[in-house]
Each structure stands twice: as structure tokens, then as C-alpha cells.
Image (cartoon, rainbow, N blue to C red; front, side):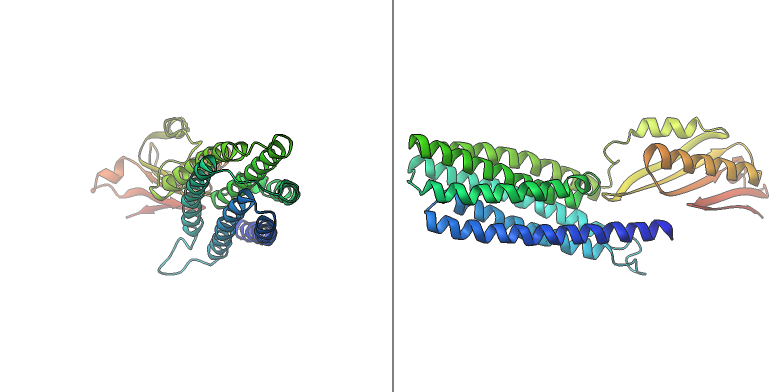
Length: 314
């Protein structure tokens, strides 16, 4: 119950924070869109298009966070946690699309640079950068433990870099009159965005394929379980990620004793190990002994899931 309350509180805090980020990003989008038209700045209009995609991505992230709060049902026993992962992958793909638009626009500007009202462009770009810095700082900590928030955070970082590029290009154009600087900076920004998109898509795909989570050494985990007193061998060890903050584990553990107190002690030790060293709280550990493979015997250790364990005599 405590874990559930903390989880709901955490998600509620994230939703509040993401809603605030969504409103601020929408405001920057309109500011850059209007500023781009007034200053005839293709850089600002391009960045406004970038922000429009970010508004869409943040909206997806918010929807995913709302869905992930919905309780599990008889048909969806794991709930809606994976909605966050799908949103993150869609956001990652949109980052690729944004980088593509930047490259195309940069190519056009290289071929046919146009003069712009640099002072108006710089004013709007500086305001946009300042707001993006505030947003990035507010999301930084949450992005470390939530893939969905991480993808939104990378969008904001992309906005910051784009704003820096616009400002740098504006300053160069203001003092030198050289309009080639803007598309060159845009290409660099696009490459940085592509790098972030690759990381988000790779991590999201890893979760969907139920790969071993990043940061967990499978062989080391196996050795730690085998090193537990009373454990003889293990098999069918599976560890995967349900969502960015929910790691699951199942394993069959062969033990040398059929005594219930021994089995319970092994289970307590394993749960503590998995929680403290690997941050795995959702475990299903099935204890087995030699009698499990001999039908004529009458005692067998059956299973354990999280905090429940049983030793059944037949």
C-alpha cells in the first residue's frame, strides 16, 4: 500500500510538472511563430516548427502519464505502464523527423540565404532560451528515472540548442552580415538531436523486447543469487523492465533443504539482495528441492511471489 501511494504521488507530481512544461512550451511556440513572421526570420520559423513538434510530444507524454495511473484490470493485469514506453518511442521518432526538417532547411539556406531583422530575431530567441533553461532544470532530475520524461527532456534540450544556434547565427549575421552561419549551426544542432533520438528509441525498443535492463549485469546478478546461503543452483532467470521505473524478475531456485524456516530465510535474503543492490522490487521466486523431481516424495517447496511463500506437503 505504501509503495502504491508513493507511486501515485510521484506520478501526480510528474503530471503537474509536465503540464507546466507543456503550457510554457506552447507559449514559446506562439512567440517564435509571431516573431518569425515579423522579423522574416526563417531560423525562428524553423525553430517554431521544432517547438510545434515538441508541443505534440509533450502532449503525448502527458497522455501516457495519465494512462499509466490507471489501475490494472482483469484483461490488463500489468495496467498501462507501457503507455509511457510507446509515447517515448513516438517522441524519439519525432526527434528524427525534426532533425530531418532542420537538415532540409539548412540545405536551402546554404543555397539561398536571406537577410533577416536580426535584432527582433535575437530578442525572441533569447527569451525562448531563458524559458527552455528553466524547463530543462525542472525536468532534469525526473528524466533520470523515467523514459517518458527523458524523451520530453531531450526535446527541451533540443529546443535549447536550437535557440543557442539561432542566437549565435543572429550575432554573426548582425556583426558580419554573413548569413551562412545560421544553416551551419542548424546542421550541428540537428546532429545532436539525432544522437538523443537514437538513445530514446534504443532504450524504448529494449523495454518492448523485454531485454535485461540497462545497468544490470545479468551474469553478476546470477552469481549473487548463487552465492546466497542455501542456494544450490538456479534456472529460468528472467529480468526485464515493465516500464522505465518498474523492473521485474522471475527465477527458479534449487535449495538443499525442505524446512519451511530455511526456505523463508532464503527468500528474505534474496528479496533484500535484489531490492538493495539491483533496485528490483517486483519478484517471483520459485523454490525447488530434489523432491520436486521425484513424484514419490511427499514434501516439496512450491513457490513464492513478493512477500508470500509456502511449503506444501502432499
